[in-house]
Length: 346
Image (cartoon, rainbow, N blue to C red; front, side, top):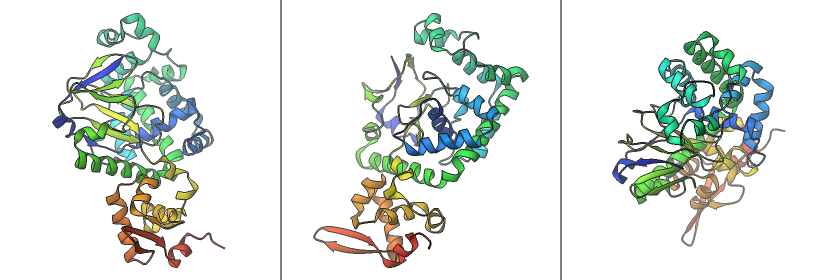
């Protein structure tokens, strides 16, 4: 089964990107249900969540993000800016209209009204009942005060989770997400709109004038007049999440490139150095453990060539990297000053 989004390549070219703290929260929460030993940053966040987030908000969020089929769209409000703040997003969650809250709960949980259009898209009411989850006790308890009180509790839980789990790593997460957006924007500028989908995810493809997303239900999204809202995530490693509520621009949360920058030894740099010179420049300095070219650094750190060149130029002007030409290649290396900045304190 697939979600089909008819659109022209011109409409796809009007797609925009947004960076969402709430998308990162939802992605990282999935590691509570499906530990990811191959993603050290997710395992670090999982351990931090179990240790630092109070039981009540953590159990509520865990109950709302455990489904393989549908997670309430209200948890990931569509970004209306290039980079959202957690404050703006939790305010949007708390302001979710009551009828939309009820509709999304109907899709998610058994024992509630069956939305006819949703049932039809998955093969009928019986099939929808198979896909829906039993209502967790913690969700039922949160709903006792009514839908508005429910989303207020959800918003507060999302803020708590972000502040306790993701905020310590947010500058580096933001660097990874920004680099992914820059890379995909460069590809679209150089090769056209369809290049967006070349290495997006195996479950997303272009076919016969439409974007197809593999899902356990069928749906035609025929209101994507302005393309898609594309939201990179460091928490998603095993698929994409789709948010399609008429008439809002459909959004796809997808796995960002360059996740190793959050955990690989080669990309490690002192946190205070990132605060001083910028996390991307600190990461590039750390990656110059041996001399490398712009292209090598871009591949290693999942940064676009233009982004790498921009930051290397600043590092060169400030005496932190040297450069030399070898044939047709320009190779960059750390200077002694950079090595001193990277050295652990004695």
